[in-house]
Length: 217
Image 1 (cartoon, one colour):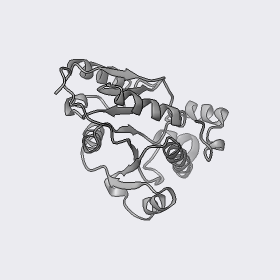
Image 2 (cartoon, helix red, strand yellow):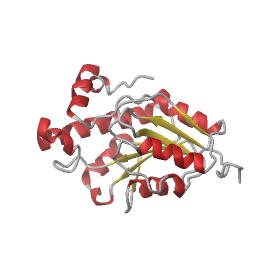
Image 3 (cartoon, one colour):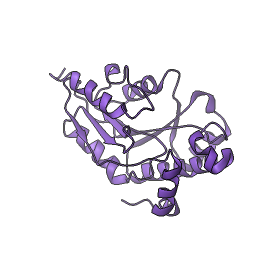
């Protein structure tokens, strides 16, 4: 046990992607007034497609797609066949509880969501490198006050407890918990995700989805 509270572990080079099935009315609901329920669902599917292509381009040994428990079925079976990823259910509980369980299964793993097209394969490799170099945790801050990526050498439930998920305080509260654990963590570049109508306009200007089949390195 290290003095900072994390157990040293050799990273498995596992990348975990959290996702939901793109069902109208259940994903990207804040974009429904702009795009409609079906349009928001189509956009989410495009974002997930780019995320998985970015994940595979990063060169991890294992890519695990964690889907919401009620989203089992043909959509994710097709995703598994097309991308060759491992499927796993997220299970119950709030976001923090689900992320903790996923990271606990894979010491040294990196976990990302599916709505941050600005993440590059190089960002994912940098996160894995930070953990191999001795960081207890790694984060990629998001402009909205959350984070788009988290990795841990050895997961701690305390790092996720009491965080107001979905609020602008997520990153600050997570930093406070890592500090309380006396962990050493590394923060990567700040990125942006797609949640609000203005993010859709930015996404269109960026043309990131137009190049999703060949994500930048």
